[in-house]
Amino acid sequence: RISSTTRLVNFERERIDVAIRYGRGNWPGLSVTRLFDHEEVPVCAPALLDGPNALQSPEDLARVRLLHDGSYQYWRSWLDFAGIDNVDPHEGWVMDDPNVLFQAAIQGQGVALANPRTVETELRDGKLVQPFDMVLATNVAAYAVCPEQNADDPKIRAVIEWLVAQAEAQE
Figure 1 (cartoon, helix red, strand yellow):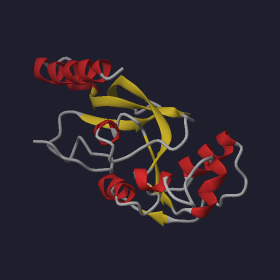
Figure 2 (cartoon, helix red, strand yellow):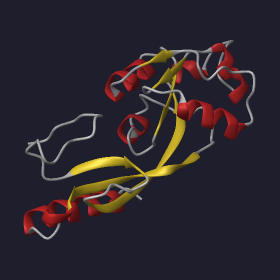
Figure 3 (tube, helix red, strand yellow):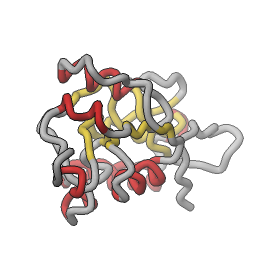
């Protein structure tokens, strides 16, 4: 059973063996295995790079809608990192479902921030492009987690080892 949710699972109440969490890796009572660092890059539809209002520099973000993943945190951090002060990180649309967020970006509704691993297929297929070559390294990572008492279960170890191998294969 695979459950895709942005909320933290409750291992005591739900029948979940392994979860992937983004954070700093400090969850008491959980066995934690680092999968990959979380980075953020702007992504958008290729059409936003064409025409008289084409995105050419990060300052041009003032002319397009920012698409947010539920918080303003990463846009604020990315704009600070890029040295941009003419763009309000609190403007734009906020979406709590990453799939909806990326679909809006694909449809040209604005520019989203994404971990390049998350949208690897869309970038490779040309549905999304990175308008600027600036990568924000965040202070969080993706981790495979499970209750400490279950960490030695062979089936759980196999799933976590598979997740680690998949993450390493994408590097």
